[in-house]
Length: 146
Image 1 (tube, rainbow, N blue to C red):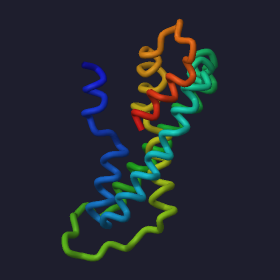
Image 2 (image 1 turned 45 degrees about the horizontal axis):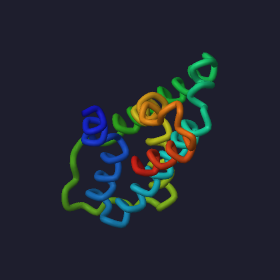
Image 3 (image 1 turned 180 degrees about the vertical axis):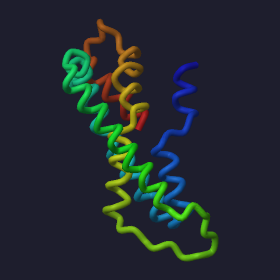
C-alpha cells in the first residue's frame, strides 16, 4: 500500500518534466526527464554505499544537506516571485539550452527530500538482513524505481 502511494504521487521531477514539455515541447520534456533521472543516481548511490548511516551519525553532514535543500527551495521561490505571474498562451517561449534543463532537473532531484526519505528509510525495508547479495538487491530495487 505504501509503495503504491509513493509511486502514484507525482514528485517535483515529474512536475518539472511536464512543465518543460508543455512550455517548450517534447524534446525539452525528454531532456528534463533525463536530468531528473541523473538527479536520482546520487540518492541511489548514497543508499547503496551506506551514506544514510553516516547522515544518521553525523549531525553536521545532515544539517549541511538540509540547509542546501532549504537554500535551493528559496532560490526556486525567488525565481517564481520574479516571474510576471500570468500564463502566456500562444507566445513563443525563449528556448533554454539542454544543459540548463538537465542541470535544473539534476538539482531538483538531488535536493528532493522525498527521494532522500525513499532511498534512505523506505527502500532498505525490502532488503532482508540475511540477504546474501544485499548490494545487488538494493541496486535492483533502485533501478526499478528509476
